[in-house]
Length: 118
View 1 (tube, helix red, strand yellow):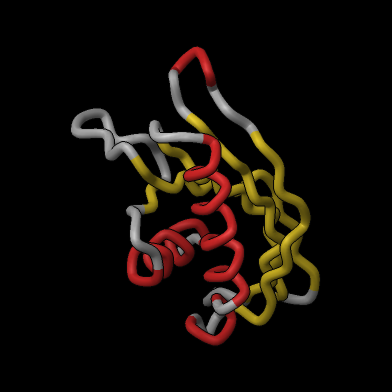
View 2: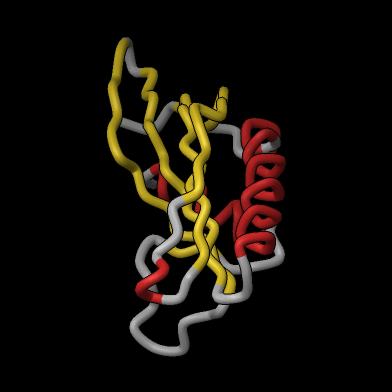
């Protein structure tokens, strides 16, 4: 299973709001997480992915910031919840609102170390 799918499945059990790989075409929730792998490396069958997760809301910047903080805490627990994940470290997080879409966003970037079946 791709690491994005593993993270999405985990977040959908751990978080109050849904996580997706793409924005839904219909019935877009007003609060959601968007998961994207932005790069990866593999050495000796150990994979490390750079994963960016956006906390998106139509409510307010304060709400987006709170969703981001909850996300960071949940991702700290990813290695305990997923046997294939050995480490998850916050690389950076920043405000990334799309004001023209009237959405408030924070993006958190994680280094996720994992193994996968051959």
